[in-house]
Length: 220
Image (cartoon, rainbow, N blue to C red; front, side, top):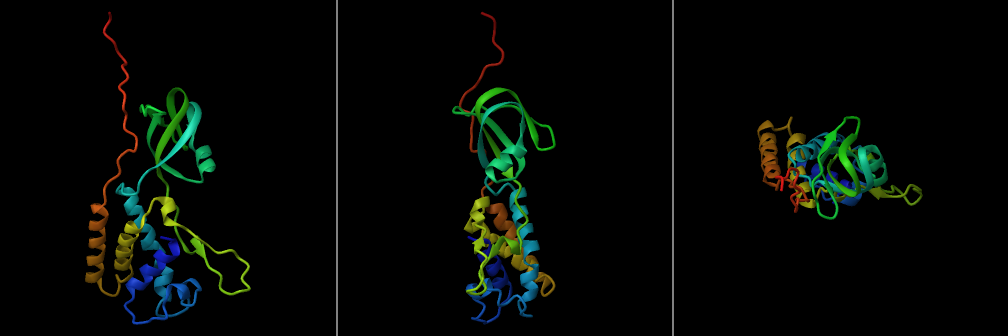
């Protein structure tokens, strides 16, 4: 699901109007940005939406990402990896060798660097992504035929957020947007969303060690 569709559905589900004009196409064109019936929710949808995504990340429900790094020794600068792979690393979960997936002991040095013991031709780094703060700059659709700006939209799958997760995010956002209208109903939606979040399967490492390497041996 794209970000614009997620935002649209969050706003639509929080307002129970029998208004067929509030379509996805009209929303993308910005026709309701100044509408008093919709503008408040359109402006306020991003805070709870981001809050729900952070909850999924903190609960370890968003799958980890993996990157391969070649010719490494000692200190690894994660900033370089981020720049080369267009990503942000929040936390390193696992470091392992290729192709046998033998785990490598690593230490977090702070300042976006880790320390590994030894030199390796190729390793994999499994990490939790530092997700961006999503807002209205995450998508754009042409408002007229004379609009020269190219259309773009953020695909949530880029951040390992699938359509199922988006459905649960909508439930959470709905509860937050109606908080001042009906506190009891709001609490019901938020509680239900938290149950949905917890019902998702927690992350497991994608790389399980298949070999045991002996460190100490009994003398022959």
